[in-house]
Length: 242
Ligand code: GLN
Image: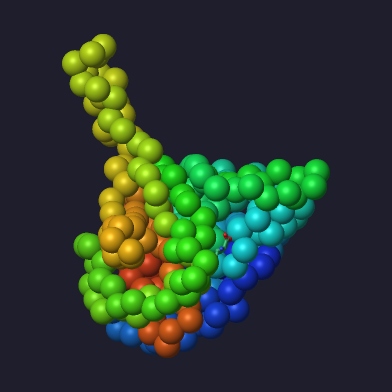
């Protein structure tokens, strides 16, 4: 049984659950998936994480989500699960902000609570990076290493990947053993898609091993290709390998 969780504390979780439910009703009757039974689950509290094979962190408002995660007791166990590498993880829009190891512009007042991110994806994120006058737009994009092409991407006050943090230790300085161990345990961040805006090239989709990060809202278009790719590539492949 393959269960994919959708973080459901705030934001567009209903739309993601609807997408997964439509997709899973197809997959559950398809001969090529006859060995599996798929289902989607709302994640609102720590025990909802039990037995998941994948999780989607949805779009919405990242500071609100961060607060709600801290209050619900989900923050610690969810951060641990993401970093364990045991399940497929997809953060999209506000969800991408939450799974990043660094966020550059987070000047928000949350009272006694701090804006904290779960981390896991070794990138730096800039929030609301498309400027106020172009808060929202759509663009057709394709993704490196995936069969998803010409996907209509909806950007809503979207974040972008402003930097990739992980770097290989410089070989030859101390010992090549250090470099080898790093190599074996570390997946590089791969850029999957970029958009051109005002003469700048902005990274809007990346992957690092079991983690997928995207800036747009694939749950807002009636196209299930991106969700299917996440399930095939990040959830199912990992469960087979494990
Ligand atoms: N601007 C939002 C934030 O910073 C993200 C936008 C979205 O998820 N559509 O959290």
